[in-house]
Image (cartoon, rainbow, N blue to C red; front, side):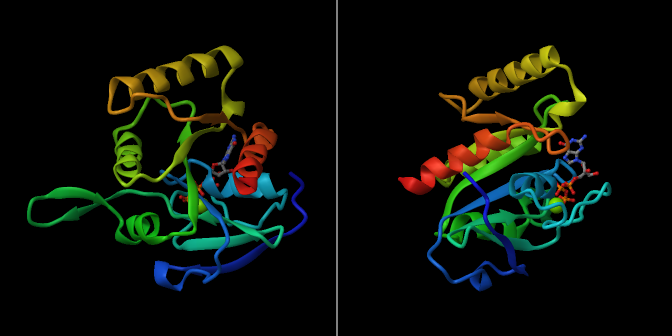
Length: 198
Ligand code: GTP
Ligand code: MG
């Protein structure tokens, strides 16, 4: 797919105030610093469309970017835990979960994980949360430029195996990407294009 236009539309913390247009959208989620905003810039070939930073916590709001005038990419803040007082139960930030549960325009989520790391509890729990809420998602391994091909293959295999040992009967679709080396762009865009045409 060719990206003819990529425009920032709005930022906000309230899902009810997100763009009121019936266009398909795809959201990028994952821990702080995993490379969500960088990936959006890589996909759109716009260097500073989404704000990036070496310091975690750069993206603080729900950011909508309109692509080719007919679909949205959504950049979200990194998730973390907020403690619910009574049962000391762990949960995800309220407006992130609100976004996933209430945003009817959401077609699919991309859960980003750093390819250098072993599976992390918070990511596995977030994928479980998406599964429980029947929200389709794919895994995007980021920062592939940091490892050699053999290690990438090994780490991906470890990750998918862990998912299959857990709640998943089938491994989710996955992509291997590097925003600095432009790896995985065509695959991701073709996938989105395919869904948009369905
Ligand atoms: P928050 O908004 O804080 O949640 O972070 P984020 O997930 O949006 O990450 P961001 O895109 O801001 O990138 C975080 C850091 O990782 C920056 O220093 C980026 O330059 C770096 N980074 C992102 N993607 C890649 C990549 O593919 N390769 C390498 N080597 N660095 C990357
Ligand atoms: Mg960000």
